[in-house]
View 1 (tube, rainbow, N blue to C red):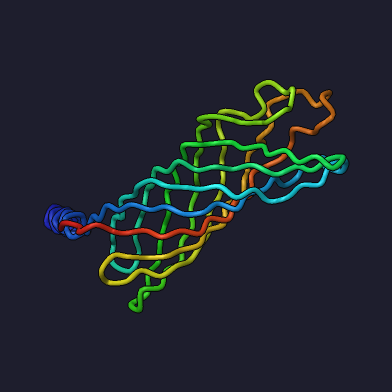
View 2 (view 1 turned 90 degrees about the horizontal axis):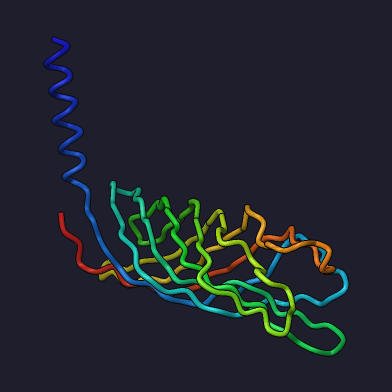
Length: 194
């Protein structure tokens, strides 16, 4: 009896795996970024506009799905001090793994972790070497809408959970700050296969 039950469970699990719909896609959009935390009392800190773009694979489990992504994404801040403006721009290869819940009407909610690997940094006139750490961790939450044809639009907020700064605080700036990113973008899910 136990063997029959085990075989039945294995067949049901295999059927569930093969019933998944795997859909690749492309996405791109705007990032509105800033730093949170740290000591920026002596400067005025403003949002910096950047971009994100890349691809994803959505693995559907009915109304729920798992969506790993690979994106090139910017972060940073615009600093104004003594009448002069300077942009600090960081570029990452990010890998979010998103859990999505989609309604029958096409609206969805999403959340999950993200790992970012620093590709480059542009810190303008600053004399700080190695401004940002090579690894950035964040948590994501968002919402959006996807049509039956695969076209969609979405917004996502990413809150950094790891320290960005990789320099000595004796430079006059506290390195204990995190990335904060609002992403607004469009995407297109290509024809999936069952």
